Image 1 (cartoon, rainbow, N blue to C red):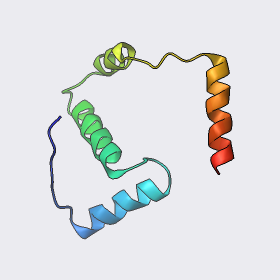
Image 2 (cartoon, one colour):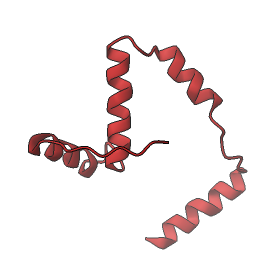
Image 3 (cartoon, rainbow, N blue to C red):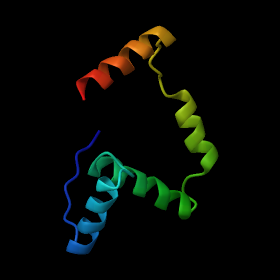
Amino acid sequence: MEVLKFNLPQMEEKVLEMMIQMGFFSNKDEAVRTAVIKYAMDLGLLKPEEIWKEIENYKRRKITPEQLMKDLEAIENET
């Protein structure tokens, strides 16, 4: 994965921070990646079927329901 660095005008930076504070995205990287994919779809460079194929082929973590409950309890106990 390539690392990019770029500057945003003040207005775009504010909007990005607002989206993160409102919980739409967990961080700036996630928001920018989503924006690039959305724009590519809007331009017709990517099709929803291609995106879903990528999602379906993504390696998932195998977890039992019991382990999921333990993980959730551990998270609840942290707060």
